[in-house]
Image 1: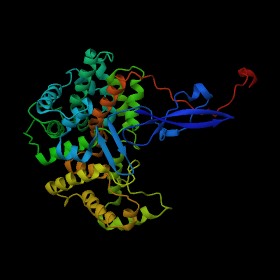
Image 2 (image 1 turned 180 degrees about the horizontal axis):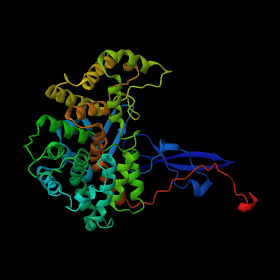
Image 3 (image 1 turned 90 degrees about the vertical axis):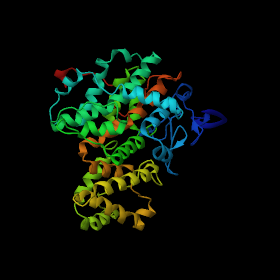
Length: 431
């Protein structure tokens, strides 16, 4: 950020205050209110922090009006189309695309850390078999600090690096183990000869009784899901990770906090909600009825997976995800899956409907990712764990950036107090 030499003037109770205006490399200018409370004894009021910049960051930029998503300056379409997930991980962590040698070294380091401590296997048995995979992941990731004591000192740059690699490497293993545990199958160990996405698919779907071959189309689709969800600026879970880390908490605890926040249906559960909507519609012949309901302002029904809170034009991730969805459905077919049949026809009818086109309610990344994961055979309960696995590198990149920021201070939002003023205490016998 840079000082623009501009100021914003606030007049309050006859007094005038000059507030500096800061300029980012992209996006709107920002009014610096850090000294406002000390000077004027007032706070600002911004529920949800939707108009507040809580930090400076050089990782991700979003322009929702124009449908732009950049990671370190690179458009998401280029990254998802030309790179793979671990290459994007390197970019987010270190700020630049890696050379061939740097990428090989990074991939090797991640691959060599994919196994989890053997005692952690017993940790899973403490959960009920019907536990939600997100509940398991929250607990297991938080417990990593009890197993990996040599990477919890946030003041040590080397320990921060080791913790970062460990979480990126082990999150697919933990997510797959959570899935296997809930369906009663044995854990499948990672293999170092497979790429990141293929390894995850094998750990989820292989069984000891037979060999499992990963289809390259499914692996590529899985890799794109990881890439397209890798980071998304200061969303709720990322802000949670930053707030937790501002207290000096260890990195595993901070990422566990992010997972817990992501579990919320308003955040990470969007693709699951989309699939549940498709199942509610049920059959292709009912689509016109539900489209009519979506247009009715008096009907609470909404088409899930269409439009986006941030993107007011189109979701730049959706185009790439649609390509993967088409490839996966062509490979696996939709003939015997009524949910996928409904999804394809709903997409077609909505894109041909002037109402949705005029309001720019296009299918978003959650619509297509849900279709892909359903086609692959994942239950909806695994959609959010896969989101968490994808977003881990974004959380870690934001965590590292914050820890290394000399301006870091513990987060302490203020409030607009609306409770009772001070009042005398009355003993219980006199109430």
